[in-house]
Image (cartoon, rainbow, N blue to C red; front, side, top):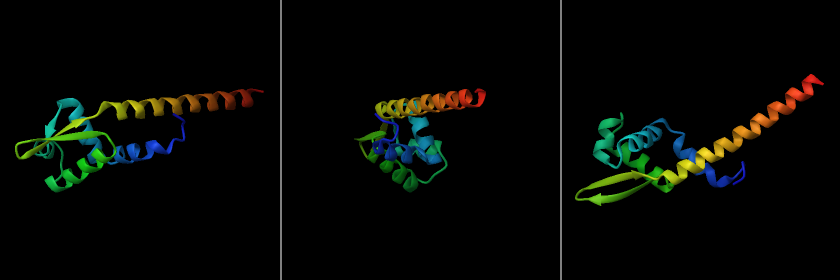
Length: 107
């Protein structure tokens, strides 16, 4: 994966919203949860939560299954691992750039 990979844009776009990030954190902490359980844990309406969850699903961050009348959501860790790897790669590039700047200034 390169640092400029456009494949990662939807992933980071999905994580860029505070409520969607709260949903991901809640699912990571508590495991699979219904839409109702998620709306009790974060300050949004059921309709807003459903929209956020569908966007997270389209980014590959969550999957859902039906349990009776409820939809149960599960976080997908592989995209989060990709995001972590991507950020680590950017951090290494930044560190190298700072080292080059430091060497230039010290000359």
